[in-house]
Length: 48
Image (cartoon, rainbow, N blue to C red; front, top):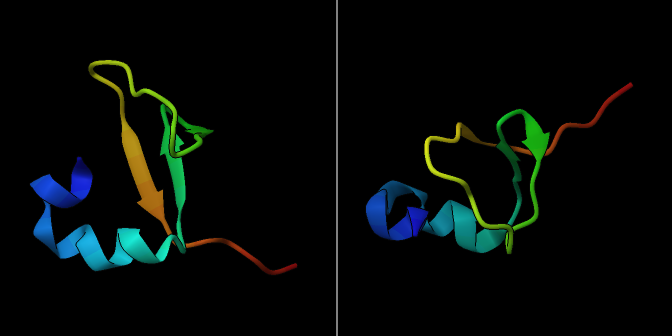
């Protein structure tokens, strides 16, 4: 749905190199997003 709505995200989302947060919690791609939720898509985090 996001790639349809925001064309610039399509290639990024298809690669799958990201973490999705829904309302501040890590979400699975198959998870349904409740109405009025905050969705954050960001690159994976690593480091120490």
